[in-house]
Image 1 (cartoon, helix red, strand yellow):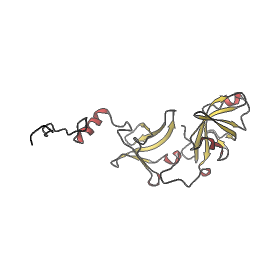
Image 2 (image 1 turned 90 degrees about the horizontal axis):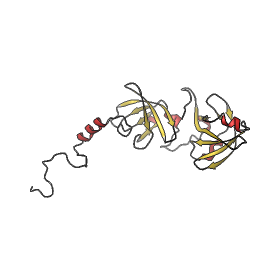
Image 3 (image 1 turned 90 degrees about the vertical axis):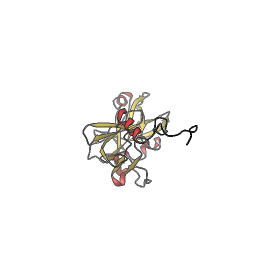
Image 4 (image 1 turned 60 degrees about the horizontal axis):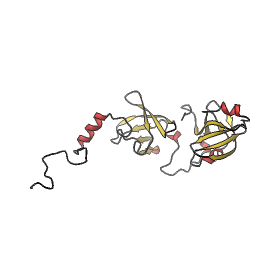
Length: 205
């Protein structure tokens, strides 16, 4: 998923896919809770500033098929393939639940691990088709792509400006370091005690 520029106040609602038919309709992957609500927030804009107005939208398996007022034929529809669609942040509902947020709200937040150690800062969020990916600018330098899952990102605290990750689930700990962490918890690979001298069920006390 592309993101607008740093000072942009827009939120990405969808991305246009392949044309559908000959009259200018396109397949659209939406990021709204209700895919059919893509036209509920007014005209949409592209990354380069063009405006697209939703005339109608209908469901189609894992996407929706939309028709825009500004797109009249298949040729124009083909030119939009891969185009991200945005809406102004102010056009979206502001009364979110405590654990709800917009992806745009995460850009720039500090990323910490479970111990409170700083990992970096959220650079962007992407959707490459296999689930959301959080791009993190690491404090030690470089970038990391973290799966935006409950396991890898257990907490998002927008009000505190923080995103908490699990370094292991996020793929930021190599196998050797992960083994060291397992050894440190005093358990073997099966979850039992590491100490071989501890008496078992059949041993005398």
